[in-house]
Amino acid sequence: MKTINIRGKEYTPVVERVKEFHRVYPNGMINTRIVSDDGKRVVVEATIRTEAGLNGRNFTGFSQSEWGKGIMGGVALEVAETSAIGRALGFA
Image (cartoon, rainbow, N blue to C red; front, side, top):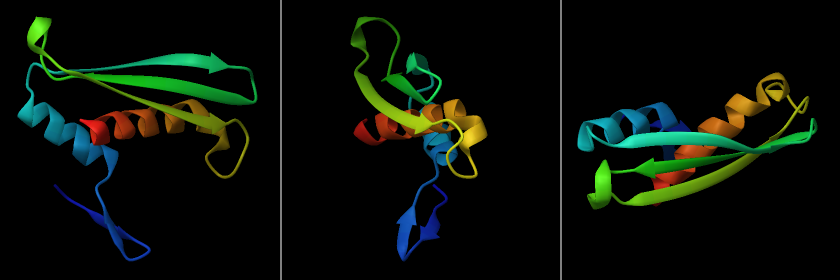
């Protein structure tokens, strides 16, 4: 997987983790849902399932982001969703 260096540490971007997940688990699934959005902060849950049916394993990650905060404040939902997916994949 491709990595990038952030402050001296190698980091695998979420897009690379998603590609690897689909390569290793071609029948796997990534699902997300908005847990809450009060107009100030959005919370997203991501669930990773390694296989369809009863044989798969589930891994879950949560993330939150604030609307209007920082340069990514206009896309807080997308930031939270990407982070939640990255966390779930990290747990997997």
